[in-house]
Amino acid sequence: MTDLSKLPAVDPEVPNAARMYDYFLGGSHNFAADRAAAEGARAAMPFIVDAARANRFFLHRAVRFCVEEGLDQFLDLGSGIPTAGNVHEVALALNPRARVAYVDNEPVTVASAAALLENEPQATITMADVRNPDAVLAAPGVRDLLDLSRPIALLTVAVLHFVPDEDDPAGIAERYRSRLAPGSVHVLSHATPDHDSPEAAAATEIYRRTANPITARSRQHVAALFGDAQLVDPGLVDATEWRPEDTIGGQHRGFWAGVARIG
Image 1 (cartoon, rainbow, N blue to C red):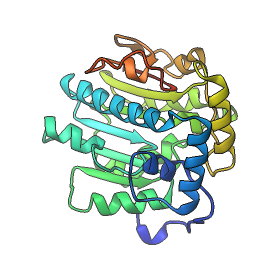
Image 2 (cartoon, one colour):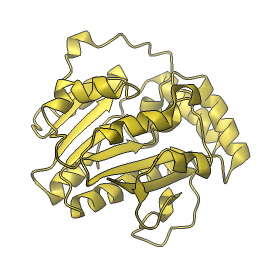
Image 3 (cartoon, rainbow, N blue to C red):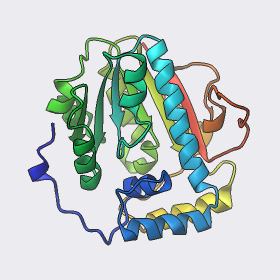
């Protein structure tokens, strides 16, 4: 587990995407600057809260799919604050032996998650930069919880759009996949400007003034993030259209989403 005494100081005046996302989902682990930036993003893209919720619901469905496929280990990169309906709650409800290693680099997120997970031995939170796979996989909260010789569900849900092109997000994703056992699964969602370009551009400008600028990408570029992993049906689709459990599919919410088998 992360040593909370060594977490870096937080500047509450600088908006952070993880805390903004928490605000969009109705959480309380955020500052005034986060809320102001989030409201600015909502003014630019009025459906951004619906987009955040659609992404969250995709995550729930994808986790259930993974458990039904027999996976009981999850590595959640850029996890954010594991509030209600989080990965370990969804997974443990279906398989009490499931294990979840959360990873994030935002101190408030990590401290809040540590408090939430204090009495949950099958979930950990690690303070680390997801752009460094070697450090993430060697961290005690990951290394001691997950068995890399067995299949793992790699979750990169709404995180790789915070990795700029110069940091090679596709290469980072491949470095994680290359360390996972055959039978593992890669779950991914990613912001896109494909359907609502003016609104997406305006929201992206808001995020440029936060600690976490966004690089929204086209469907072609998001598909490349899967490398050679094989997408399961229905492929790479809008988050609302990935195996929906209701009839709201077809309402584009600004996220491409998919699940792919590794090896």
